[in-house]
Amino acid sequence: MRAEVIIVGSGVAALSAALAAAPRRVLVLTPERLGLDGASHWAQGGIAAAIGEGDSPAQHAEDTLAAGAGYGDPARVAELTRAGPELIGWLQQLGARFDLDVHGRISLGREAAHGRARIVHARGDATGAEVMRALAQAVRAAAHIEVREGWRACGLLQSDSSVRGVLAADREGRRFALPAPAVILATGGIGQLFRYTTNPLHADGSGLAMAITVGAVLRDLEFVQFHPTALAVRGLDPAPLPLLTEALRGVGAILIDSNGRRFMASTAGAELAARDVVSRAVYRQLRLGPVYLDSRAAVGADFPQRFPAVFALAQAHGLDPRSEPLPVAPAVHYHMGGIAVDAAGRSSVDGLFAVGEVACSGVHGANRLASNSLLEGMAYGRAVGGYLAQIPRPIMPARLHVPVHQAAAPQDAAAALRLRHLLWDHAGIERTAAGLQIGMQRAQTIAEQATQGTQLAARAAVTMAILAAALARPNSLGAHCRSDADEAAAADALQRAGCSG
Ligand code: SIN
Image (tube, rainbow, N blue to C red; front, side, top):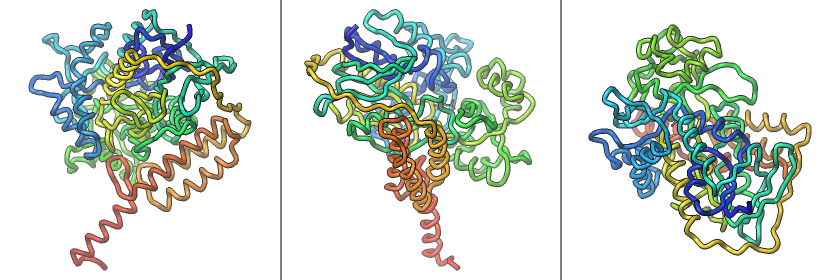
C-alpha cells in the first residue's frame, strides 16, 4: 500500500487519527503489538467527561484551566471539554465497556482538582486497556489502515521545507524510506528521559527529537508533570515505576508519613489538591522520611475487585494494600509541552502533524488536569484525521532528502543513563537557575561526544531543549517550580513586612 498518511505511534491519539482519516490510506508504525502496550494501554485513570447530572463542559473547562495555573488556552479548552460527552458515546459504539452504577448508568469517579465526580473508568483501573482494545479492534477491521508492528521511525523525509515521509526501521533493524504527503507524530511523552518515571520505555522524546531536526516549533517544554504516587520500589535503571492511580485518593486513600501522620490534611484540597501541589508536598516530606499511600480504610478488602491493576502491581512487589500502606514517591508522568500545533494538529512545518502527548495544543496549560489526556488524544486525533481526510492530497516530489541515521555506539547506553540522572537531578520537581545551568553543561558535553544521527544525540538534543525552556522561565508556574525564585520572593516579602534578619 502506498500510504497517504503515516502515523508514528499507536496510542489512543494515533488510532483515533487513523480511523478518522478514512478514506485516506493510512500506515501506522508501532514499536509494540497493536493495543497491547504503551502509555495509553497502561492508563489507570480514566476519561474526564462532563456527563454527570448537574455537570457541564463549562465546569470541566473551568477546572482544566485552574489546574493548568491559568496558562491554558480557553478556546481550546472549551473545544476539548465540549468533545468529552460525544467521545464517550463514540467509544461505546466501538464496543468499549465502561463501569456502570447500580442504575446501569456510567459510574463517575473523582480525581484531583476536579470540582465533581466526572471520570469514566473501565474495569476499575484498566480504562486505557479497555479503550485501546476497542480502538485496536476497529483499526484492524478498517480497510484503509495498514499496521506494521515492531516498526519505529528513525527520522523524517523532507522535500525543501516540507515533511514528506518517514525513515523507518523494522524489527530486524532494516531501514526503509517510506514517502507520504503527511506524517502524524503520535510518539507519546518524555518520561524515559528522567531517572524516575511512570512511562513505558518508548516514551523517550523521539517525536520531539524528529521535530527538532526539521525545525518545527516546540513550546512549553518546561512543563513536566510529576505524579505524586508512583510505587517507591527499587527497579532496574531504566525501568518505569508502577503507578498508583489518583482514583485511590479520589475514593479517600490518604498520604501519611512513617508515624502515620496525614501531612496534607491542612492543605487546601488535601490529597486531592492539583497534582503539582501534591507532588511537591510528597517530595518535601520524603526529605524527612518515607511517605505512604494508605488505602486500608478507604478501600480495604475490596482492593482486588476495585483496583485490580494496582493490586497486581503491588503484589508483584510483595505488598498488600489491603493490610499495609504502600510506599510512594513522585515520578515524571506527563509532558504538557511539545510540538506546537493548531486545532487541526498542524505543526509549523508543512506535512508534519502531531497529536497526543508529543503535541502541545495549549489545553493543559502549565499542569494537566487528571484524566484529560486520553480525552485530548482522542479529540485531537479525530480532528487531525478528519482534517487530512478532507484536504487535497499534495503532489509528491520526485526527490526526497533522507536523514542520516547511525546505529548506537557501545558507550551510548551509559551516556543515556547519565542524561536521565542529570535531568532528574537538575530539572526535577524543584529547579534553580544554578542547577539547570549545571545540567545544561553536562548535557552539552554528552551531546558533543554523541555521534550525529544516533538515538543518544536525539536524547541529548531534547534534554537540552527542556533544560533551556526551564532556564528561560525564571518564575514558578504550575508544574514548573523554580524554588530559587520562590525563596527570593519569600525573602523579599519578609523584608517588606519588616521581618528580615
Ligand atoms: C492516574 O490514574 O492517576 C493517572 C491519570 C492521569 O494521569 O490522567
